[in-house]
Image 1 (cartoon, rainbow, N blue to C red):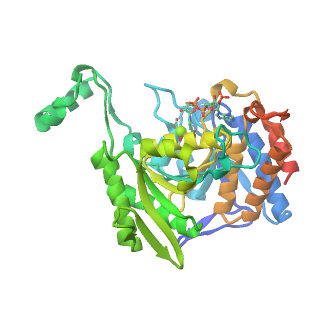
Image 2 (cartoon, protein in one colour; image 1 turned 60 degrees about the vertical axis):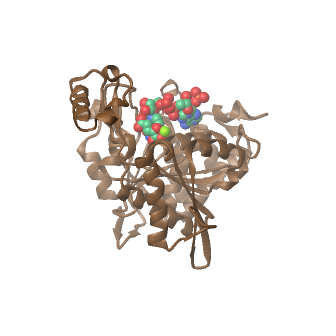
Image 3 (cartoon, protein in one colour; image 1 turned 45 degrees about the vertical axis):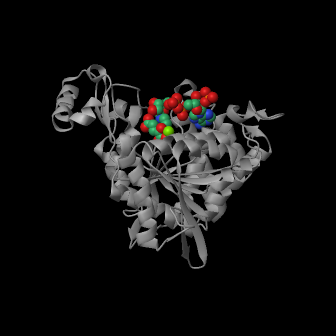
Length: 407
Ligand SMILES: NC(=O)C1=CN([C@@H]2O[C@H](COP(=O)(O)OP(=O)(O)OC[C@H]3O[C@@H](n4cnc5c(N)ncnc54)[C@H](OP(=O)(O)O)[C@@H]3O)[C@@H](O)[C@H]2O)C=CC1
Ligand SMILES: O=C(O)CCC(=O)C(=O)O
Ligand SMILES: [Mg+2]
């Protein structure tokens, strides 16, 4: 009999037949979801011989939802994720410029999934543009609810923009003077809070201790945006000091924290320097905590170093409520929609993260083993095949089948 996953005192209770809601997604979503679901079921069967089984429950968002219900993101979808606690999704389309706001961002904000967790590591044999992709092993904690993603924007020349500018002019004339072309400027607001920073950085430090990682790096552009990105850095260090008893390292600002014999360094770096250092000296970075927009850029850049966004997994998590929504890092790649072509690896590894999250480690291991086997056999999708010698090009669905074969 299928049951719900629940949480008591911060601990997940996972039945043997949990109901897990899924959103298929737009564009390449149906292709990668079909391949991924088959892999997930095979991994669970392989790991537990029929003792455990997921009951997948489809919930709707994006184009499929709109065509069915006239709504892009129905309330029932939020309600199901709240009810079942753990869910997984494919990518959803967001048009550039006017039109609907990002459904992905709405899900994260509405459910307060404040951490976007994106681990980045290299799998043996995956083609990479860098010399030593094996040196890349980072875990990104991207703040997921604040920053310019709050969506507080004023379109250039609109009545709202004029009203907002007159408020500025009246109350903050010096700031207003800094707008070079006020008549034609669009404006945006970037909220970054102490609470938002604190809960994200706490998650990153806890993760670093739990997984015996060496450092947590706060990535920011605080030299320019002093009261948002700079404050993120300062609040981050404060969390380490006030809540974990961090001590200054060589007079600060870097710090060390020791717990149960394990030591981590808490440090910071300015975002542009970080982006060049990950190419030159990736071993200097381990767990990374950063704001929403930086995290978006950083996660695609790091993914490229280890084989591309075709195998970059992720999760949106609220560590307090226990809500977790797993999803690939990439988008809907519309030009490949319905072609059974793209790499389902990101969605599949997001599923492995999900199994790990619910304590089904054997199923997660089976997925990773299968993926490594398929790559070692060089039976890969177009994104890898075009960069590998003597590889066999396979379709999205076939890659899933090869993963199952190698479990
Ligand atoms: N979380 C989400 O749901 C996200 C949604 N989006 C949305 O997706 C839409 C498209 O965005 P876009 O900027 O084109 O970014 P995409 O990530 O969808 O695609 C960009 C490129 O990345 C490569 N790529 C993406 N997915 C895969 C895959 N599974 N396997 C192999 N290669 C892949 C392809 O490269 P190549 O051309 O070299 O083959 C593709 O052209 C937008 O509406 C955007 O808002 C974007 C990001 C996240
Ligand atoms: O919601 C979107 O359209 C983009 C989201 C995105 O780029 C991401 O989550 O990395
Ligand atoms: Mg992105």
